[in-house]
Length: 126
Image (cartoon, rainbow, N blue to C red; front, side, top):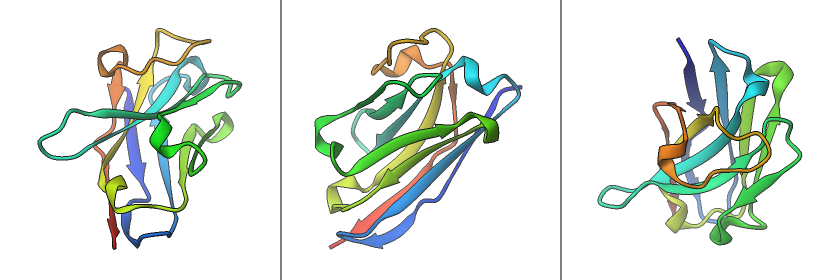
């Protein structure tokens, strides 16, 4: 029973910051790569950021580079997404996901991920 739980979403004004957290239970946390995705109604789910199992490699979409930072604390079985300088276009439902199949590379397509959380809503006002 693998379970992912996101938290930290909310309403924030443009230019503000939020930190999302994702806790993993039910398996060895360090054995999986982790990613953050987001989705707006009517659009496809979009890869945002990813991190390898050991935290040595990260990957971001261009629109969040320099503003978002993904990190992980394997001792706490937790992955974080620090979001700074938020923009209204960042508004979305944010999901964390776990990938069992990659340890040294980060997948950016949704179907490569094996486990998903329920999502946490981020809303950025003008």
